[in-house]
Length: 391
Image (cartoon, rainbow, N blue to C red; front, side):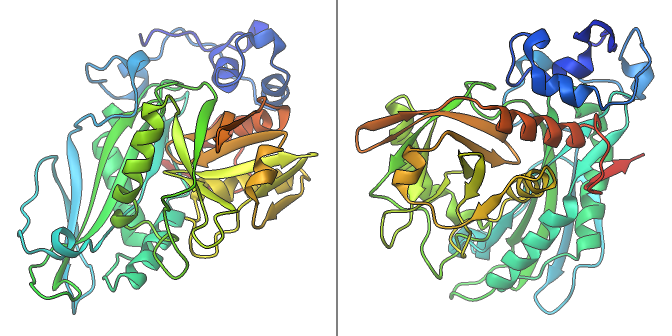
């Protein structure tokens, strides 16, 4: 499992396969991955990637069968403060259940936020985080909306670093997945009437993960939901509150029961413009122009969404953030979704009112995927300054 040869010769090395495995069945015909690979520095051949080369003893996990499910790791991080104080000191603790009052703000009134980010293991065994400060800033925005105390950016990032390093043996080998990190901010203090909780808890836990969808890395099929809605103007659709997610379950479950991968929501005012899927942002490509719905407070401003926009613009592509009518989506040349969990996932088809549109996986989304994951996994030079290396 861990005795893998890392080589670039012949085009079949692990670096090349990492870049092309998402979209290409045949490395020799993967033009995008070949172009990206040509920019990589030469990596010396090594005969193994094991615990001695990384300094970690891997747990007994079948990395090849790793899906997106919870695997209990060793440690979590916790920090508490009262309503009239600031967060100051936290610590690691063995992963396990937490004590919570039945009258806590999070249980009674949904006063809670969460984030999601990933850590990757490089070929040399070093660890990388991807843009953790963006998640910290987004949590602060959400906390302000929900009248909560929030950790500072430095406190957030430091907590994430400690959690990753404490659980580093759970980070999959290169190309086998990542360590998904879940920071939580909850109103943990007890109260009866509706009001901001008197105490708050910030905690971070982690789990090794593979592909999010059961289809693995295959293109997905979406069903447009035209009756139920994810968010509304003036609401909380633009922040990552815990209360945004249970309401999508009914539409999502009904779509999956019909054989679709996920559901795509429309705006709740005109029911004419696309917004986002249950857990990810959406992009369309038409005539080589990339478009994605503008957030406007009803759509979560995804970190992956933001990164894809920046990468595309550095390549010289035109990217528009604007309202996108459903009919434009149905007529698009290419469609893909983005998110921390799903990275960049191509869409094979979208069904709306019984009409089904089909899409191909195009060269542009392949190029974006190869470059984004190349940066995240340390295979490409990070000219954006997005990654944080952990020692």
